[in-house]
Image (cartoon, rainbow, N blue to C red; front, side):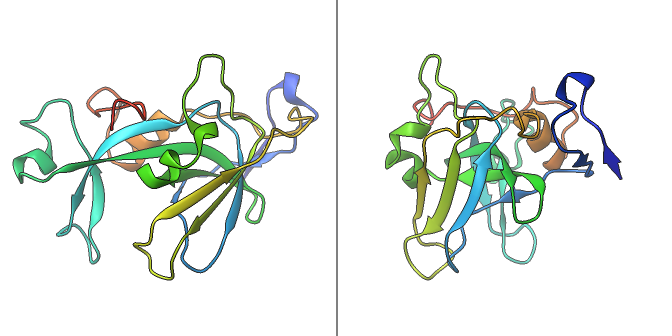
Length: 180
């Protein structure tokens, strides 16, 4: 199912509407390129819950600790950053997951007043051959004309939907420097 953008965006390509936008992480198989659609990184405090699913998963830390599954199970937290992107290979929006290592070594991703990441190319890769190797992120300068790009989307709302929440309010959102 394809939808046209707003009349103001008539020159932009039609975008396929998906039920959700997937979260993508760096691969140990090689570099993956994305094109940033959002202005800045959205950070969240997360719990690693090894007993969720076959391989475990990250669960968001909730502001109300009495309802937070990770706090109830006395699990520690770790910061994760999320960036709304466009994946040219599959022609769809994705949410790129960034680790502390990726942020620490790339000052372009740090939040600054008036800073805008939209239109930049983001390359994610793992430094080793395992899925737990540190993540490296490279960001290029913005492209000259981003008017042809798909629209920006609300990363927080998409993440809340993926994690099973009706709103963004119960989740503990943290900027990069607050999560350190």
